[in-house]
Image (cartoon, one colour):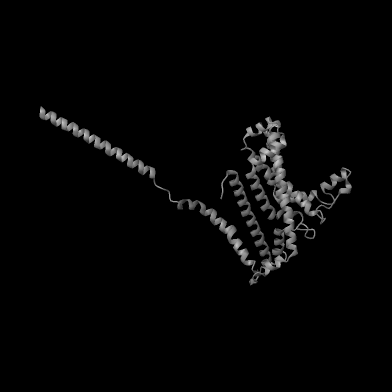
Length: 341
């Protein structure tokens, strides 16, 4: 009996020890498993590159390779047929002394005003009015309909819009002159696109109409993230619409303003379609811009090397402007967040 009890006791102790050792092993294995699970199999970073590969290849084929080829052609004297002859920096030296190029560049500055500055200012005011006034007093649906009406010119192809405006601004039977005649203002009839003193301003007016919808939509989207309590607090403090716009709206959508100005300025420097459809750079080069000047040099004068030099200079200007704009935007955002770089 005693032996049995002792054996049983030993057996019980042994079994308890065995269970404890098993429990210890299992807990140890659980800790090891937890450590192994915490580490986990890491996905190699190279796998993400596969998703970027199609975009990188498309960028190389569509942007980088043509730009490098165009830059190479800009150092040659070539008429588009035969073998190019190396001319070094001759095209660029000629470009620096070309009055027609600098005139076209000055016209592109007017386009920056028409496509970036004015649409941004008007878009800010209209977006704030639609969001803060029309939306509150007439409903969000009315504001959405008006927003769509302003954005409609952005949807139209520029060729279609240009043809329609060429009909409106026609000197003889154009709609604008007919309306002025019917209103008893026949003395104001003009050849809007044929007068060298008016053609550039007429094209600018068309581009303001075309470009206005883009900043308006961007600014209204930015206003969606502004805390409504800020407007309510300002209104309770007696602030009118203009003070709410100046002190609440503008500071809160500053990132959108940077984006719109940069995007529209680049579009203004590259503008081509509207000039081609409306005036073809005329009359007498009064509406010529660098992109159209390069086009005519390429295909009408067949000075391919010189046209490539114009395109290269324009591309470099746009690239520098884009990088500078992004840098200024980053600095402004860091200043707001108190980050020093």
